[in-house]
Length: 85
Image 1 (cartoon, rainbow, N blue to C red):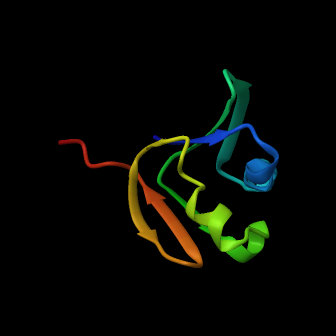
Image 2 (image 1 turned 30 degrees about the vertical axis):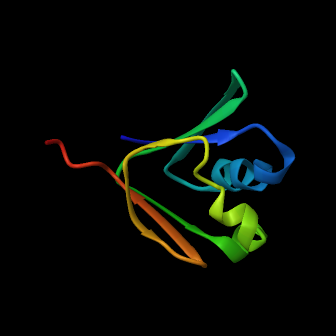
């Protein structure tokens, strides 16, 4: 299971709203200042779909995550389940 913790501030709220519309993603919270986005398998996000400027985009994971970053560049973020090792 993948979990992405999103700080409950206006700058990151488009990510939460986007996740609420995506099949396979569940949004919980906010709890203690963070939303939690959960998914099985893979989460792929595209910066332009979220309307994020580069500075906000590169800060999107400041809340932390449970999973493994498979790709994170200027346009795409892909998170997969961490290897069970």
